Image (cartoon, one colour):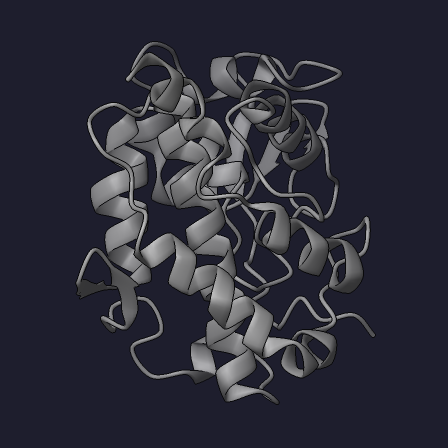
Length: 225
């Protein structure tokens, strides 16, 4: 049993997802959906493998995070590919609430994975790791999350997102923030204020009394031009 448990972080393997990401997502997070379309069978195979190998009680926190973050991101790409060409994920009816993702013999929604699974794990940095196929979202990484890389990649996505002037802007006593910090404020402020949380990742910390505003959210497709 001990040997099996030690290998859980490698199974199901996220290697196939990693190969697709490397081919079809650039370093800025722009996605080549036409490229994904041509290899949709490989994406389907990966999602099928996940559906049959869901986490159990023996999996640790990072193993579960890797599984569900990758599942969310791969399923979002699949959703776009199935409706492509579109200008925004919001053009798809019930894009987050529709139950279509196979998992342990039942069908779940993107909303279920995010709100009922990932957010309940108690790691607010997941909001910088999952991608909703839009420009104002955190960028889709072109590498998969694994249990071994989880801490490094969660830190990277948090630092990248908070310091990205397209998504958050800090000037003087003003903090213009992504609406992600408005929608999920409670996840970030369990132990500190919102700006205190953000300052842990910000290269030049904002004043703790900065005036907070929220930027408009760009829902246009995060597509490679």
